[in-house]
Amino acid sequence: MAGRPRVGVLALQGDVREHLAMLEGLGADARPVRTRAQLDDVAGLVLPGGESSVIDRLSRILGLRDAIVDRIGDGMPVYGTCAGMILLADEILDAAPGQRTFGGLDAVVRRNAFGSQVDSFETDLDVPALGAPPVRAVFIRAPVVERTGERATPLAAVDGRVVAIEQGPLLATSFHPEVQGEARFHRRFLDRVDGLG
Amino acid sequence: MSENPQTTTGTARVKRGLAEMLVGGVIMDVVTPEQARIAEDAGAVAVMALERVPADIRAQGGVARMSDPDLIDAIKAEVTIPVMAKARIGHFVEAQVLEALEVDYIDESEVLSPADYVNHIDKWGFDVPFVCGATNLGEALRRITEGAAMIRSKGEAGTGDVSEATKHIRTINREIRRLSSLSKDELFVAAKELQAPYELVAEVAEAGRLPVVLFVAGGVATPADAAMMMQLGADGVFVGSGIFKSGNPEARAAAIVRATASYDDPKAIAEASRGLGEAMVGINVADLPAPHRLAERGW
Image 1 (cartoon, each protein chain N blue to C red):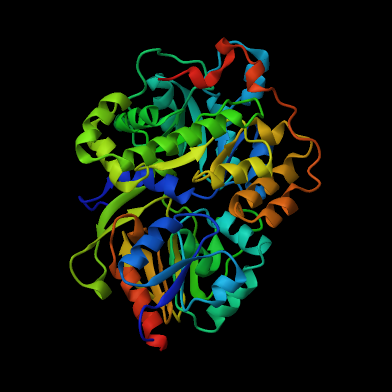
Image 2 (image 1 turned 45 degrees about the vertical axis):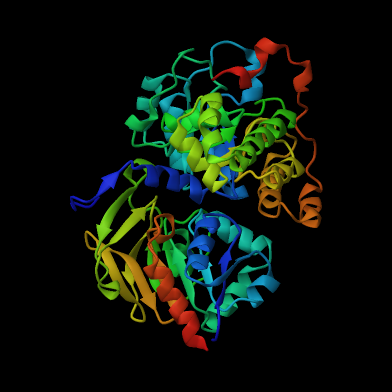
């Protein structure tokens, strides 16, 4: 794709502002996505941090859910952080009653796996696929990948628990590169979008 | 938790980060696990666990304090979303107790009776993040200086009258816009007038926004109230008495969530406003004698 890739950030709830700023900083044409027409207009989608149960609920009420599921099925590049990882997973543990995911990522993800907010933390995380230096990773009531399916590849782990994962055009992290100016995951997502052209 | 020596908890980034994850959402006051269930099912991003909603604190009077730990535990056990709880202004031991109970956020709140009329809590000393109320920019910046990781404009809690909430969010945002218009040498005097540190004032002037998330509270009772606060620049809303003092809490809670998400779409707000039954009856703030105005607590 020539020029600036046009990508969206699902803007129903969560840290949309931080993702838009990160993507714009990397030269993308980044737009909030709150309607079906806006979704049709982007070549890739970021699912932000936020409250996964709320984003799920709003996506259904506002009639976006089926369209997102279809686009993921068609191979649209998607990057999910924290709540976004939960929304991408085929299966979730410790879900809110009735909570669903968009799915696509062959993984089982446990919601809020580290405990309450006082257990939220930041740490230096080695991500071999990104090389040096390590990622300063911010985990906020974060999920973990409890089981990685055959089609997916783990990218990083904390104490043996997988916190970053990839599967073709899909990328997901338990932590929030967007709140601390870590650009390499968003770059990787934009490379997938560029690769479509 | 990792044994990596580079691992730290309770950093400003981790504390402010949770508030960033709540943006665009509705935080609901609940007094029982049953209400907490209704709130989560309706799409609340978090719940505030307390013994009495502000409307009842106002009606019943007396000293209002931190909630019973059993109640907080029961609400934490009921829901999967973050649970917040209130400590009295300046009551650092109530805050220690709430941290020990592992609530996700502490609200150092004027809705409870202040425990110290001079000092607020030193919030830097805690791993748990704090949200504090403010009626203007100076107050917001003083709370951030003390370690608040999130600000909510105060409004007038327990009234169902949104006029004070409007006044406070407009005031804070107007004062930020004014700061951004000042030249560098004028910021020193601005810092003095705001009674806030120069570095923080300069940071806000440069960014054109607070370094933390800004929600609105105090008097929001309808979907249109919530959407108006969002259009005025709020990052999200707290709804206290407005939901569980109304005729149909389930429907009203869901409607306020929907209107907050679709705040710039009048058709969606109209849809959300249908068939909600009776709103909270409320009290006009203008009819409240000054000693009963909660927003004047804190400084």
